[in-house]
Length: 80
Image (cartoon, rainbow, N blue to C red; front, side, top):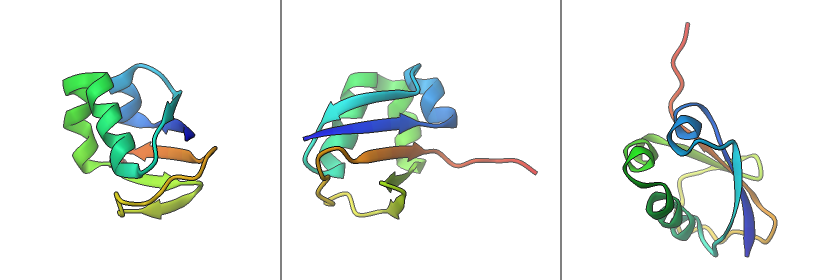
């Protein structure tokens, strides 16, 4: 199922793009694909990332992704 992946902050720096489209059935499958496709730089960032699926935060990697979902990859932000 096609989903749109949007990267922010350190995740965007690790992959070098703002968005991409992937085919994945679950969040776990998608995260595995992203790590395989983008290598060590993204693999270092992913464990600390939060994920929004269509604007809703989830930690459930078994979550089934609906066709056309938007997945935001959000590393921790710092600031003050």
